Image 1: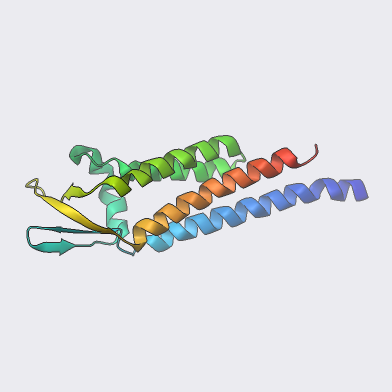
Image 2: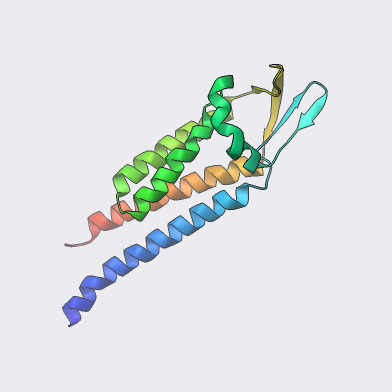
Length: 154
């Protein structure tokens, strides 16, 4: 009976670890949604909208040359892979998400209206940084669970 209990413990610990990383990552993502993602100045106005507006309309980004929104599907995929215990692929997906989302750091301007007017990005705000934190936590979760699974005796 002691052997059976010892065999179950690593699996239970792995489930808890997965649950913690998923919960914290999803929570950071959800908390970022009502917060501003970035601030743009253009046409004499300053624009700073909640992140959920970017989430809703961001899929249209490629039409104006903005691809960073596509970090969201890869983040979702990394969460699913973490949940299904495909840690290597989850880490690859989270890394891709981080690279795509991180590309926004080098963006200095963006189209701000239907007329094609461009605005200068003044700042990346708290919503953006929480989004990045959410992705980093997903990556850390997949990597930690992978390393832990490799170190556990079979």
